[in-house]
Amino acid sequence: MSSRVIPAATRAGQVGIVHLGLGAFHRAHQAVYLECYRQRTGDTSWGVSSANLRSNGALVDAMRAADYRYHVGEYADRNEVTLREIGVIEETLFTGRDAHGHADADAGRDLEALLARLAAEAVRIVTLTITEKGYFLSPAEGVLLRDDPQIAADIEHPHAPRTAPGILVEALARRRAAGLPPFTVLCCDNMPDNGQRTRVAVTQLAAYRDEALAAWIEREVAFPCSMVDRIVPAMTDADFGRLRALGIEGTNAVVCEAFSQWVVEDNFPTGRPTWEVDGVEMVVDVAPFETMKLRMLNGSHSLLAYLGALAGIETVYEAVNQPAIASLLGRYMLTEAAPTLDMPQDTDLAVYSEQLLSRFGNGSLRHKLQQIAMDGSQKVPQRWLQGALSRLAAGADVPCTALGVAAWIRYTAGTNADGSRHKVDDPMAATFAWLHQAHTTPEQLVGAFLALETIFPPALGQHAAFVNQVCGSYRMLQAPGVLATLDELAR
Ligand code: NAI
Ligand code: CS2
Image 1: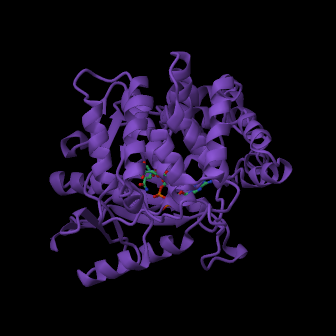
Image 2 (image 1 turned 135 degrees about the horizontal axis):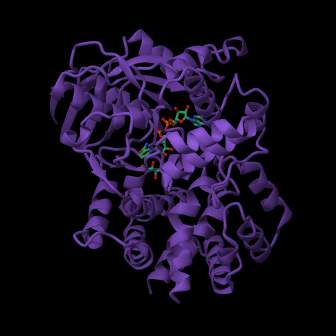
Image 3 (image 1 turned 120 degrees about the vertical axis):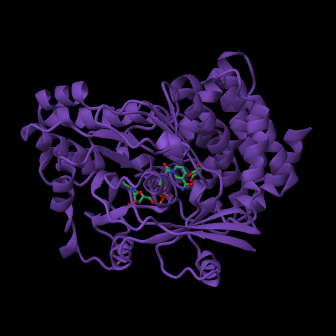
């Protein structure tokens, strides 16, 4: 194992960016680009205040205890790792409730500090990685879930918000009242048109409070889109162990692949770091890159997750080492995803698909399929369904996507093919459990799932050939099982 260590730039900085969603990805992606920027320029004005709104207060505390320093282990393969120390996070805050050592009395303890930080003049950008469900938008149509109890609570108590959209609305209202310019909101979650979706969540919520505020946000606030890419699995004990063996102690560290990409719409009226010098691709239109990544990379990930988990496979690495699964991914990417993409001329999607298979085969990452499988209701529309609709409209067939949908429906039953149980972690888990209970035949069950318009556009859910294909795949998955179904599909 060869390792090199890159220490953090030493100077403390000023908070110019607030990040919502201090998870693994933020620490291994946006923070790394900002660290490179600080090292290169010496400019400390883009330090980060990073907040968790819902879960993981323990990490907020651990970051404070470590003076906000941590390491990122970037693994090119089993023999090569770069250990990067990160020092751009200046502050961490927690406004949520969770089981990690915070009693209810603590709930919201840093909310006022976060709102004050967001209203500070020096803050010019807010970045977000709060997972797809954190925007409270219906997955298929992207409209605000006004009846969600958390959104309803933010409408009722706008000055003590709990959700990310609610916090952004209150912070923007404070800035407007103080005569300050707004900040730019940069969504870094895996959603299509993610800037536009964030704008919808924030302006629709603001309109319940004050039409004039909503109009001001619509007019004054920039919500650039971005495509983010770096595989950052949740940390395991084994990951901490191998970092310890390299001399890295502490619970704040993360490991990830060496590859990293960030494509950002260049729309920052309030200013931004010159991070294009550090490898960020600043473009006019992110959409082609975002759609490519969502359908090719994330679509493949979800296929692996549901089929692999049903077959009792634990990680991405183990799944792509099954020849039948690797061949399904190749076929899905080249015949069902790539033809739906409209890319700049110099993009070679065959090369991109080979690169993805090689990244999935990085043996130094233990990326659990169960992690990717979570929140399927929020992920499946943009990863599979929009592409499938356009293939079907072009008169083509989508057997790999139909198999994926069947595997996802089967997965939401909460059991694997061998009967062992897994947790279905999804905002719609209760609905899924009820559908499995209420419907006994595959036809009824598949029909009931495809009728969920919040996930399936009617043009797809009522497409007879697609429905039949999903039903057929579902039956095959029940018996003879996952690998036999893949063999059959390959014929
Ligand atoms: P994580 O599990 O480490 O962190 C999740 C973060 O989201 C935490 O900060 C949590 O508090 C927050 N969160 C969850 N539900 C929320 C809600 N309802 N409201 C507000 N905050 C909420 O996950 P990780 O790895 O940081 O990924 C987060 C997101 O980043 C992903 O969902 C994805 O959109 C994006 N991403 C992740 C990649 C990865 O490989 N891990 C790569 C590309 C994008
Ligand atoms: C994964 C992604 O968890 C998931 O659903 O598909 O987070 C994936 O690891 C990243 O998008 C890679 O950039």
